[in-house]
Image 1 (cartoon, one colour):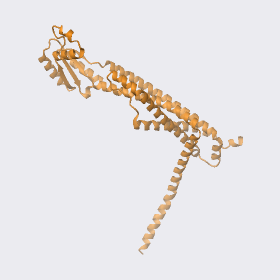
Image 2 (cartoon, helix red, strand yellow):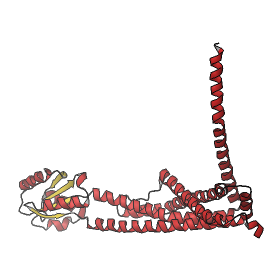
Image 3 (cartoon, rainbow, N blue to C red):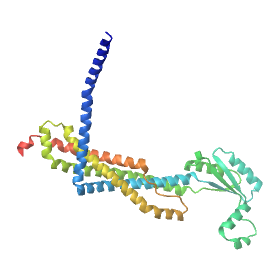
Image 4 (cartoon, one colour):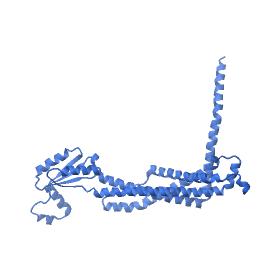
Length: 335
């Protein structure tokens, strides 16, 4: 009697396993078919290396150009953001303002919540710094009086270092009594940001155009592959092959083309960065700038390859959708 429940439990487990096995077998068969189709598609590409390499090169150039321009714009925007964040306001005091009054003005400015720090440079210190940096010692010795005013060097808070925040702080300081002139040179930086915004839009438009060109190139290549395998497609449809079954090899072909094109694009970008990085660093050093070209990195390279594969797959899907419908088993009789 004790063995009867055990037999029933074993029977239930066996029934459950029998119920799951067809699903598992079907899944394994489906994955095995995909693996074979992917491998066969890759093998066909390697059988025509010249044609495949030409397609990969065209895709690589079309993908590398907008990506390289976007990397350049990203580097420019990063440098301009650093310049903008390091903006410092220089306030020149009136000549009749004494050192004690200058200290009071500095404390008043320091009390504003938008100000991180204020440095007071008195006129004697400013003259000594100018003497040391200009090399005009003999000429400065002929001066009867110090022509330089007291100066406030104002550093804004991080929250106020945008162009609008700095301009608002400039208006506040300029309206104080005893301030002769306030200077902050952000106009050229604003013009640079406006130019980079325009260039970014142009680069994105170029990327869309070249992406469309990549889709067309892959679509035309897959269309030629479909025509070369027309009889094979007709036979597959005659024996009951579904549209998905017939379409699958060409979709993998498009994905392989995209993978190769993405790798070529990454290699072209890395080669261009290596070739240009030295001259650009020397030029930046002449301007005492830390500007340098930044590569795509691992995440960027992975995104580039995935996008290239998606473009290849999309081009293949459009070609297959358009041309496979025109191939029907009845065409054999006509041939």
